[in-house]
Length: 244
Image (cartoon, rainbow, N blue to C red; front, side, top):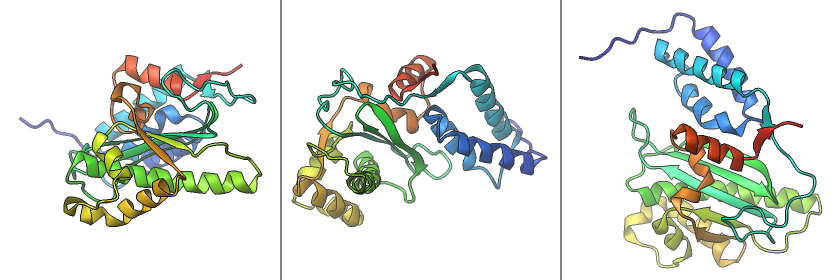
């Protein structure tokens, strides 16, 4: 028996609240995934969607002491799970293949660090349906690299030098191998633009893509629901911490 889920009777209130939450994601990276989810129902919202918004608000009320921590001097070693301590930019990219039950599109997300400071993050449903987990991860890689290229250009204008090429961590072996393989496979021709975009950056040594275990993938917090314990663990890695 399907449970009845009535339409929410005040769509303006819903949109105003969600709009405010979108602004809050500029400093609270930990709510990015949840806010992106409720944003997908702006025009067909129900009581369940409003309940999800209220749950986000209750979480914020209980964690109002948290905020994005920016350190003036980054530590020499960023995290125990990365060897990128000599690199200016470190990036984590991830995708949840066919995670949406409504249209089977994948969620893509990334987290980009300058030193030990989180400076850019993203969670968004991909525009097209992916036919494999490798394809969804590769699309996420391309979106991440586009943001990375813009940040590199910005740092160059600000005269911030980079000693080594940025490193991008991906937890999908297929996407990692594909990014370094110049042989184009017939099964991936429908993502040809993304393929050549990524390959060009790697071939010119402007980017290093490496595999990371799923348990160490920070970008999971932007692509899928997590247990409370896992969420709190990744929240601390996002540098969302109590403010001094």
